[in-house]
Length: 395
Image (cartoon, rainbow, N blue to C red; front, side, top):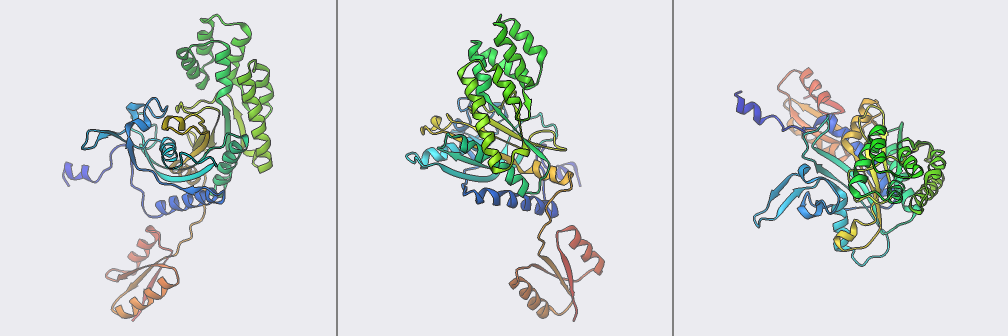
């Protein structure tokens, strides 16, 4: 095979083929995760794989333009491959449910595309599944979303994980109290997110803030852990916005204890998101042997306004590929219900067809194959291609 031929059989950087038992395993985990979303009454919705550029623009607060796959249609419109489901769902809700005032519950699955060179082992195309609750601003909605994520991960087979919860309003309130401009706030957010205490201290000292406010901002990066950390955070909440954020977190936690999922919950008030449309509670799920969060979510009460419908909302997304990877490494993948049969015959084709039909009628996925090689080759083929059994049909 020449160089051009070799290139044709390879995939570009950041994407990969999935087949056989690996793909069957991914589909099974996806099915189990989705079952729990449906059990909460969330209804499936499908949005286009590509949209107009404006749906994911800087004003919306989603993925940076340089990380989008952009192209043009024949009318000259700039289109992008979907990098993030939430703006698409928001657009769809604004279009079809503009006048609806009763809360809407949607769930979805599909592939997203991020054009970044900083892969660090991540894929540019990932399968994502998630849920959105639109039209409910209550703490009950936040608790439902987090509890549903916990129960969905458990249903998919994950046993050891934590959902870390933050509150953007806590940090924003402290920045308002300190009268920081947006540029300084964004710089400080970067330091706190990376837990760069030295950089944060140097920046704040240059602003000549009052000692109390400066101390509160410098301590944000240390506010992570169990429920008790909220009491400590409360001592730094010297403004109504920050105090309200802690009060909200405490109420959500109380509701999560009612759901019985509190053992999976922790808090991190230094948590921020690259998506700027989040407005209140945000959360991320972490497990062993993964470098980053396998699921992320939060409240985005002003996003739908960008599409003409004023409505609060909250949601989350799980990266199915990362969840599958975590379960595989932890050897916790749920067992597959394998009803795939390989029927191998020699000359009695009529008998073989009849038997294959009988198996299919019983719900078995049945492949009929004429024997032209030794039996061991078919047995090996069945093992490598997700067949539960190979049956040799005699004359």
